[in-house]
Amino acid sequence: MRIMTWLTKTRALVAVAGASLLLVALTAYGIGQTRAEPLKIYFDAPSFRLIDHLERPVSSDEFQGKVVVANFIYTNCKDICPLLSIRMQTLQERLREEGLLGSQVQLLSFTVDPARDTTDVLRAYAERHRADPSAWRFLTGPEQEVKTLVADGFHLGSQVLPPQTPTPGAGDAHGSAHAQYDVMHSGRFVLVDPQGRIRAFYDGRELDIDRVVQEIRQLLR
Image (tube, rainbow, N blue to C red; front, side, top):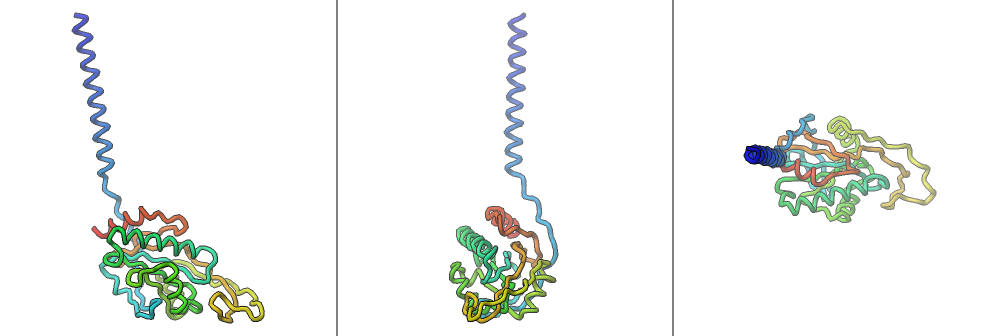
């Protein structure tokens, strides 16, 4: 009788242990299969008509049906802009590897300093970052129009700081005689869905490329 009782208890314990292992396995499988949460809809991305670094007219209407990733830079920036452009360059290469660049995803870099960022200046900057001219475009336009687009359209700040006193005979990095000044601006990247709605903002200083690509694919489903 004692032997039968021991066997019965042992079998019960084995059954409980097996059920627990099965529950753990099913839970882990369920976690792996969980669908990503839908991205928040912030507001409609602004409409615009500008020109790019190759002097081509650019309209926001061109990007309907594509995901857009945008950031905001200026070529005289010595602070955050070099990092933001490296982040965008890295994203460009990753999207190329994924087969998404250009065909389904467009990259846009808006200058916040159109007074100095002429198309020639932006072209040289784009070349330094190996920008694909069909997939990563640097945009400029009339100064007030660009300022309004950034502030009222994307709801991001930019502010020209008081200029430094220029050294006699000195020009800026592009040889102009303009007084030296900096532009304080947002370092965020903006994700726009194929319907033209802003769905995410990312900190450009700590851009998670894997997350961005995952959320781009989520918008393309």
